[in-house]
Image (tube, rainbow over all chains, first blue to last red; front, side, top):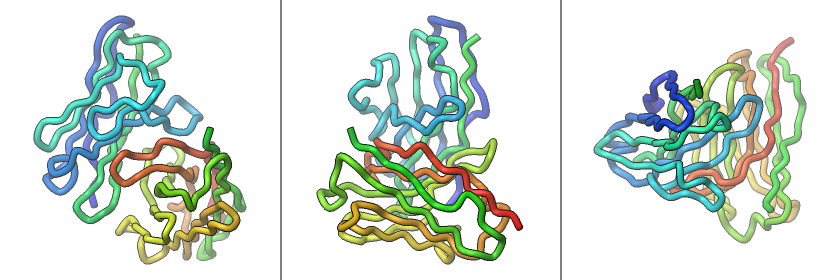
Length: 110
Length: 118
């Protein structure tokens, strides 16, 4: 299985919005609403931010939102804050009953 | 608060078998959920390795399937990973996590670095 495609990096100034894309295929992202997003600050374990495309687990700020169109899922962070810096990963359930991650996107808050 | 803690050797020789255990506290594995392993080579991205349901159903990354075994011990409330015939490419931080195949992994261990070297 091939990794989902994410941009290597994105950046934004405090208060702005940024969107990270996650492109898969009709065998994963496009066929299931089973996309998750994780935040990983340096040196720490990943943290689940979004599940099932757009659901926020308890405790995740509503500045984080998810969506999907066709084979591409997106994570949008609005009202960017310095604490949002880190790496972001998407993942999806696949038609082979497996899980595949994206390559990761480094978010820099300018 | 569910807690997961990985344990195992930090150094494994090439061609040998990597063995890790994940102890779960504040939640009974037999109550449900899926339990998985994810690794991250130094400076690189996340890679899903395998997942097991509390009943024993297993799911494996096709690229690692021939070398990986995941198992669960409900009596000890822990689950384990074995990766055989390791090479330097298997050097990574290994995380254990709780989740579902649908909703992702909601609780993670702190991760343990395993280095493959002679």
